[in-house]
Image (cartoon, rainbow, N blue to C red):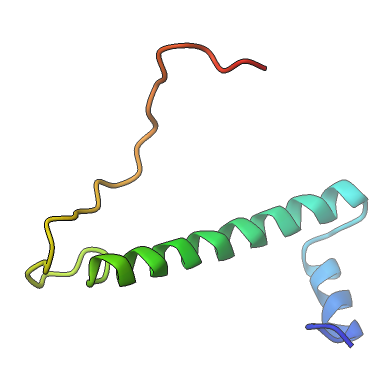
Length: 78
């Protein structure tokens, strides 16, 4: 048995209207991205010693600079 029961998997498929392999891939990609981002945020909290947007004095000079799209100087080779 996996992480989800067969009934839970059927409910997930029905709730997200998954019909094709592409639908399933898109749904799992979203779940994976959210999970990975939460894990990276927790790792950064631990590394910096405080939570994001915490109003406590920071124990280090390290700071979060936020997430901003940065334009590269050269186009990405594709």
